[in-house]
Length: 85
Ligand SMILES: [Zn+2]
Image 1 (spheres, rainbow, N blue to C red):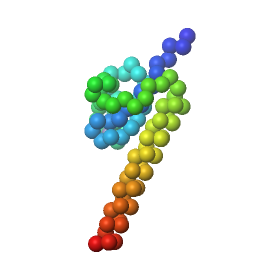
Image 2 (image 1 turned 135 degrees about the horizontal axis):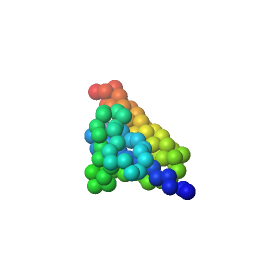
Image 3 (image 1 turned 90 degrees about the horizontal axis):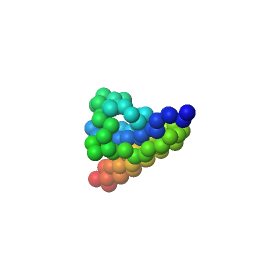
Image 4 (image 1 turned 90 degrees about the vertical axis):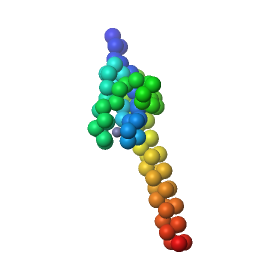
């Protein structure tokens, strides 16, 4: 009973995209750049380890939102610089 494996939320070392996988796999394919990442904490950045699938999807969503916000801020700064120039 209860032998389900935890989920890992991790960051692709090549393109920085975030996804979650079940622990126990040796590798995970990045859905964005196609890189096959080794599930090795020394090689990829693991953001979260959780037994709850909801917590894993939530973490992915939050991370993507943060990344989008950061991009948005950079864009705005760039636009202002252009206008002033
Ligand atoms: Zn990638």
